[in-house]
Length: 167
Ligand code: NI
Image (cartoon, rainbow, N blue to C red):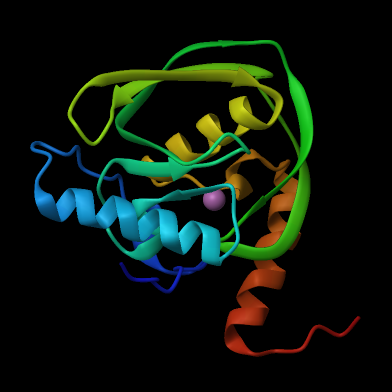
């Protein structure tokens, strides 16, 4: 198993649409193990493959009930609304109050190729929506209001360039 560096904002792989996994090979199984290890090391409650530079439709998560994986996941049901101070390992040390669906259900495959469903509200619902966003090239920044997003992007770009903010 191996721990991978996590790609951060500005890396183009985070903005790519991930491609579906056609066949679950030994390499895919190994990737999933490495993703789980990388997620725990971070530490985070979820990690999508593009975040370690692999643009494939795979994410792992653990909201406290043990690790799980979804391959080629799709959201099949959403309802309600919930605001939560959301963060992302690819936009480290920043949190914004973001409104999303309160409940979400996703369907995909596990590492044996069996169809699996995960669902929940609060943190689980949030995780499913957040990670599936990553697989479409989305980031939590896309859910900010235009004004908040503009200032967040400016700060992140300045940080990436090593420019110190004035205040
Ligand atoms: Ni994230």
